[in-house]
Amino acid sequence: MDVAQWIGLGVAVLVSVLVVTVAHWLLTHQLSKVSPLAGPLVRHCRYSAYAAAAVIGVNVALPTRREMEDRSLFPVIDHAMTILLIATLTWFALGIAYAITDTVLDRLAVKNADDDHRSRRLQTQVRLLRRVAATVIGILAVAAILFTFPAVQGLGAGLLASAGLLSVVAGIAAQSTLGNVFAGLQLAFSDALRLNDIVVFQGEWGRVEELSLTTVTLRMWDERRLVVPVSHFTTNPFENWTKQGASITGWVMLQVDWAVPIDKIREEVGEYVSHHPLWDGRRWSLQATDILEGGLVQLRAVVTTADSDARWDLCCDLREHLITYINENFPEALPRRRTEFIMPGDEELPFAAVYTESAYRSRTGRDGHRAGSPGPDGALAVKGSSGSETDTRPAEDGSDGE
Image 1: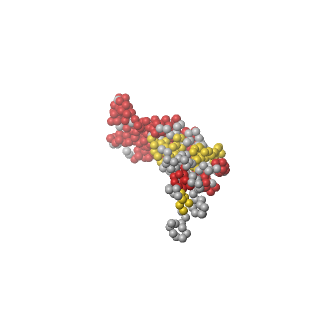
Image 2: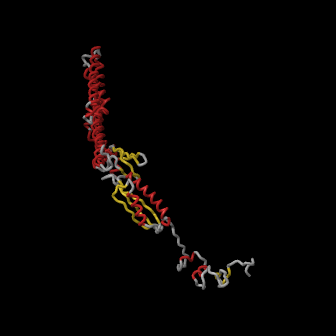
Image 3: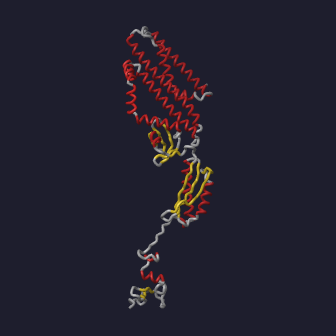
C-alpha cells in the first residue's frame, strides 16, 4: 500500500469514529432528556460502536486486490477484516439487545414490590429472553466466522448431509442440559417462579436472585447463595410464599401449664399485636390447639403481616413479650412436670409407694389413730410389725428406753 492508500484508510476510520462520537454526544446531552433508551445505549454500546466504526472504515477504504502491490497479502487481510467485522457487529448487536431490555427492566423495577407479581413475572421473562437472544446471536456469529474458512465450509456441507443422525447423537449427549433449558423456559413462562420470589428450599427460605436457562440462584436469609438446577423446581414440589402476593400469616407456639389464664393471655396478645407497627391489621388470634402427653397445654398465637420479613420480626417480638409477661404475671403457668408414684400390686391408694406399711396403716386410720398424732402420754407412736406400739421419741434421761 502506498501513502495515498494509507491516508485514505486513516480518513475513512476518522470519519467513522467521528460519526459515532457525534451520535454519542447527541445521546448523552440531547436525547437522554426525551428518550429512556439513550442511557442504556450509551452504557452498553459505547466501546462496541467505536470498534465497529473503525472496522467498517477500514473495510470501506481497503484497497482491492489489483490496487495492492503485494497481492499475496490481500486474502489474509481481507479474511481478517471479515472476521473482525462479524465480531464487532455481533458485539454491537448484543449491546443494542441489552440496552432495549434494560429499558424495559428499569421501567418494571419501579414496581418491583413483593406483592406486584405481574411486574416480577415480566422481569423474569425479559431477562430469560435476553439470555436466549444473546445465546442465539453468539452461536450465529461463531458459525459465520467458522464458515469463512474454506475447510469448514466443506465440513458444514457434510454435517448438513448427516444432520438427522447428528441431531439424535447431540440430543442424547445433551439430554440433561436440554432438559434444564426447557425447564427454565417452562418456569419463566408458566409463572411458577419469578425473580424476588420467596421460596422454601430444604427447610430454609430465600429469594430468587437469578433465573437462567439452566440454574436458579437463591439468596438465603443469611446471605448465602444456593445454585440449584432448574429441573429441580419442575420435578419437585416447593413452597412459593409470594405466588399471589406478599401477605403471609405467622404463628407463635407456647407450652404452658393447665393453670394458665387463657383469657388474660389472649387480651395481652391483642393489646400487643394491635399496637405493633409490623402488624398489617388483618387478623390475630390466640387458641389452645392441643393437650400434650407431658401434661402441658399448647397455645398458638396467629398474626398476619405484609411480607415474610415482617412476619419473622413480629413473631420473634411477640414470643419474647409473652415469655416475659407470663413469667412476671403468671409464674404458676410456667411448664411443670407432675409425677405420681403407685406401689405395684396395691392400687387402692396412690401414695402407698411413698409411705412404709406401718405409716400407711396409721395414716389411713386402720389402727385407731393417724401417724404423727401424739398418744395419751404425748409421745409419737407407730405400730410395728408385731402389733405392739413402740415409742419413737428419744428418752430424756439418755437411756435406751428399756
